[in-house]
Amino acid sequence: MTIGDGEKERLLKTHSEKLALVFGLLTMTARTPIGIVKNFRVCEDFHTVMCGASLIMRREIVLRDNMRASDEYEDAVDEFIAFALAPLMDKTSIRCPCISCKNFNHLSRYCKDHLIIEGIDMAYDPFVLHGEEGQVHVVDEGVETIDFNLTETYEML
Image (tube, rainbow, N blue to C red; front, top):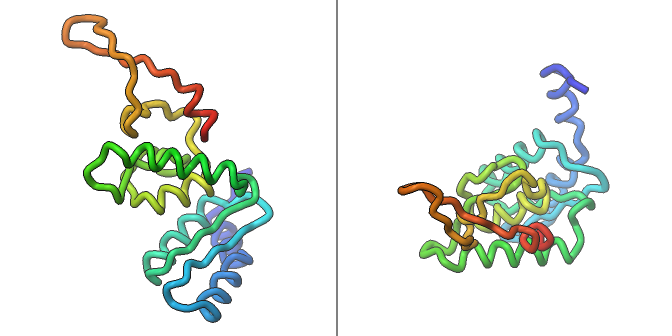
């Protein structure tokens, strides 16, 4: 279903998450992260709005749906981020393989939120950018391919 920009703007103004955010800002101390859990999928546009609000207000805002809210999924995301950060000198940011970011650099804590909210892009497979080592084969002089066994990685995520 495609909606126009005017209808999209009207729908974004009526999100209940805005009320939850305002309530959190009014009742919680300044450094406390604000967590908002929905019972249905977070739309991409509103996820972008909340990311902007987080930057402007300098508050950590975690917006998630129940689809990926299990402890097992969150543990797998933590393991992935720890694995990706291990070989890096800068232990604060990694390439985010979520559905929206498509491998742009983000702080690891934002990457975690993105993977929990958006999920991993299942078409994404160059995990070599996250520390995964594959078997290197020389196909032609000067050309290398990397053979990945990604089954375990996908199961983890």
